[in-house]
Image (cartoon, rainbow, N blue to C red; front, side, top):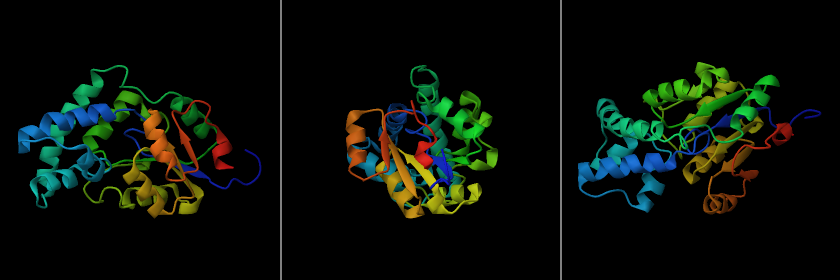
Length: 228
């Protein structure tokens, strides 16, 4: 990366971006929601009310009223415990996306500021840090998660906090996302570049419709040219 780079920092969403765990998340919802309301989520509900949202927001939608923080935590942990069991019991899914560890090492070795910004709750963050050794690359304060103080996507608040923690102007940051709600949040944050990622050809085709800087299937071959 020669000269003065256009972008100087990078922020990653987590679920579906650093771990391809969408199936496990959706399976946990399919398990729990019919038991709570009698019918499961439709595909449209997943798109509009689940992906990118905090658990409190999702369960508030399910029950048709604003849940308290304690209620959101209680119901959220019911769902997340199912998800963590499903993920940890599937070795093919319970791994970082191919190529990302090498990319993380490259970023760290070159002093590129990086952060994670996710709607996942604290219990999942503890699981991810232990399971994937995230502390090798990310300082604790640069893992932004749903701590009850920020709205979920498409509100840009989660990304705004990550940008603040990097200490960079938004236009100097790259955001990597997998969902349309996340892309809307990234755009609203003012990020200089957005990279879309999906493990499926269908997902990548959908992401291309957003006119992103780049759309990838994994991190193999990713280098510092994305900052140039």
